[in-house]
Length: 288
Image (tube, rainbow, N blue to C red; front, side, top):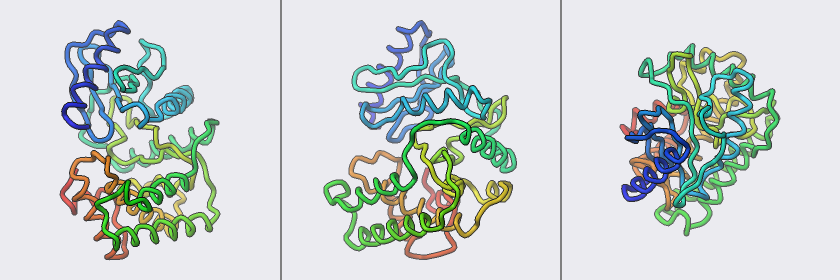
């Protein structure tokens, strides 16, 4: 979000929290891109904020509620208020339990174990969600429409159009078992807490092979996750790179260093395999 939008989002969030009886004296920005993550103090609440119309927060709440009931490794909704999507001044706000980080990152074996447990819990819940191919179709639509991605060069548009379509078909044709997935379980969406690794951000949940989720995590995490189809994982990694490249050219994208990231991903896609993991891409490009 832009600074003026951040100021409005913080004001809306603190107003909502105060109206619910949660004492708020400060709001610390933990993460800012297309959505905003805030730590509210002294009530110690984790707030997720997005412009209305750019979120699927009700789906996220329902998935998190069911997973919490199953004891899955997820951050729970804030127990002092009703589990609702709160709206004010054009923003949708959800409120969660805040956890103080105990280590800078989660170890690969612990990450893999937590992700395996998350997947096990997700196989037990019944929530209508899109399929991973629907998310690919959104990226394809973005690339196909110059009004949505005006700065994308014609040659790059053709590259992404071809790559997204061919990879979607290749993964679909494998007929691998599918289940509910997190959608983006990268290291930024797993917290190191006193209760162990806990996942956040379920707005991108979709159905697909577990390798689609694993395409978002470091290689060391994959090495500790059992039963991976490595050829399928390779296709999923390339697909995720192409999808993220497409999103970085969205005219409304507010990802930090988004254009630099988009250019770098296009270069990687042209270089060919072996396909890097997202953490390797971030290190290579030197961006957040």
